[in-house]
Image 1 (cartoon, rainbow, N blue to C red):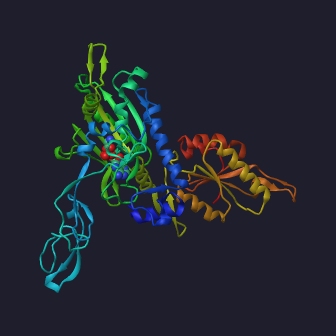
Image 2 (cartoon, rainbow, N blue to C red):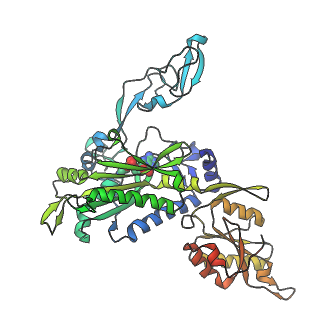
Image 3 (tube, helix red, strand yellow):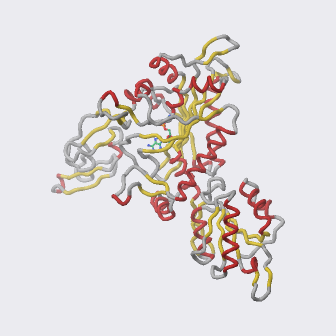
Length: 493
Ligand code: GAP
């Protein structure tokens, strides 16, 4: 597994992710997606939406607003429960999560060594005096306050007057936008249970300890599904909510594997009773082996009928589905697969990263799934001083770009151009050379063929210009390289 520093540096160097407001010293908890990052991010969102919304008959989409009626957050429990216990240092004023303070290395001024300063690993005692941490782990001097609850929602004001009556919040999850629209969607689409509503959108949390690059940030994006099921129904001898919960766990695991996460880098974590959120009957997380250790990639919760009942209670509106067969109103149970776009992007990046040795040189390659790769095809001229080669290359780029993200690059020698594309995960390079265009001065006609190079095997084939579209159609839809290229001559690298 590569270190986070290597990925952070690649992301900045190649334009995937930049620190937000960097020229002002940056913010510790927000990140900006650069030219390649925005493509990668869009691709993740696109395949998720296609696979989980458009290709399923039991799902519809929604795009709710970020600012909602403040009572939403009272009803959902976020005003009362969405908080972490915090302790503050009375000396340096640093703030820590009470439950994480013992997981930090701590500064100690040891009396047994005339007050020398030591930084002691988390959870360990001083080797010289045997003391354990009681003071601030950061400055080693201040007493910590008793734990106090700190709400993670960002407060803001709706309208021109900053007063208590106009306080509202930036949504800390997209889920509530779905619950409050449950009846709108039901009435407008005439759905029957089970069915789901999906949404992708920004969420904001004033995290106390953001960090690990884009893993935990204060502004992030979620891809959430609320899947409504009839709790009175049995499926294969089990209550429908339990059946669907297991199905969604398996579907989410399969989705991450399909787009490239190695199965042994992902595992399930069943929440213990004392870990469960206030709304949950059962929650299972998919953990990914990030460089800092196994950490949550996404969660799949059985939220029961908690949210719909709460919103019905606070709004006074009925949020039920009418079961025509049993002639009864049902408050559906909800299965909620909830993933972060940024966390998924980080996992896909880490999993795709390889360092390989090729003919004595190091090659860095991102083995992205072709659907996720930010650039699908790079058109590279072998000689940029030959106008026919450049013109053919640029024409080709414009033609391929109508269907796939295609770039043209002539800013270095071919070997270096290939390495640059490998490093950003471009699955195919197309090289235009002298043989393609011929030599008009010598009266030699070109063969109108170009070389396609595949990123992972570095194999090359020679393909007529006229056949590029159907070849890439098949390759980029997932047909194996060996199958598509069987009929074409190999080219030497
Ligand atoms: N609606 C349920 C919910 O929001 P969550 O476990 O708090 O549950 C779901 O968040 C997912 O959103 C997480 O698994 C993670 O992928 C992403 N996420 C949550 N907080 C995040 C943060 N501060 N930064 C980046 N991603 C975050």
